[in-house]
Length: 541
Image (cartoon, rainbow, N blue to C red):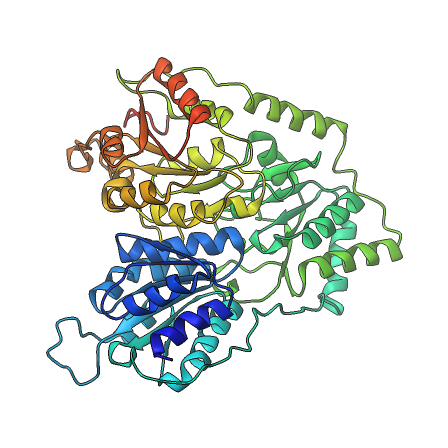
């Protein structure tokens, strides 16, 4: 077998169903072998960064390792931001990357790829020889899965046609079995909980899974505590009568009051970032017990009162057992009055807010997104790019389970949404993917991928929050009473561009066209782009 055939066969052995990429001279034969094998889908993107981002989106909604492939040199430098996004987000990813032949100092695409990769926070593994190909590949997939990070498998272009015998991968995606937290610290944490008058359970993304959810709900019911989540765990407790929703700057008024009045917070699988704790305001003066499955993210976060490392479900169940053993009564922090207030919050959300006056040809972002929320299926995947519109998107287009929220902002860059939306929409086939992006992000990285969306034809709704400006910069200029001219984008007609690429599109510029957009969502037969025209002076108001 040729090396490029061995690599494709290795992907097949690993059960890779989706390969995202952009071909070049260092990976085209491997991709061709993968496609010829018929074992999975190859989704070609038009920019290397979006290919890597697509693999990240795939990883977020499936919980499996995403896989992408690109060629060498400028292809890898193009993907550096996406690799950094994956590294900061703890997303398992293997990027199969070409490299120039050694010794060719005059090759135009020659660069120090290892140094570049390591600078992004990703791991780097050189494929040594044809006869070690699947051994090296297995190591890359193992590290990506166990360490939850991107790993670049680097393959020199001159090795592609080397001969080797068939190779076997023995690796299976690891499922580490963690023990529950135990010992004196666990007992001290339960003692804090037993003396709490208003305990609160907060769950983060690490709590995804039926076992963890059931254990946390059982503990909350046992101690009569409300349940909250981080943004990235949104929807985990959907349907529970004392689910107060997101903790942080997206909290609704009742949730904010409940959190501020709590005296003990049990934070399961949550890193307790400044966004979750409102810069520490939600945790100040409280006893905080943090339970994590590992300690990888803790050094950059504010320390809790007690930190426990162990299995989430097992630790929650151990706490419940200790409380039962000591016959500790419930706290009475959940009662009929709280249930009534939460029901009122839900009813208010189901009611469209009053229309806020905006400039001619624009609409109010809150009212428009809430109306689009009503017209979309309740179950959808939300991919929100970064921009000043993003909090409105997260607040007004909620998801019903954590894996249906694709978070694209670990590195704080705009334009990372379109790639992850492609990865999500080509993976999920039982509900639509909704991408919310700004005009700046669309101009930066999305327009070149419209042809990919047309070709793949996924169930994708793109909402362009088009205020004609770079929002953060517009805010800074106007806050200092300076003209915001430099922040204005003067965007093209996104609907016309989408239609030119073969997509359906509609523009929202008033209440009547908003209703037309809702009808277009209901009647969609393929991808749909909605150009949502917003007043740059009213996006936050």
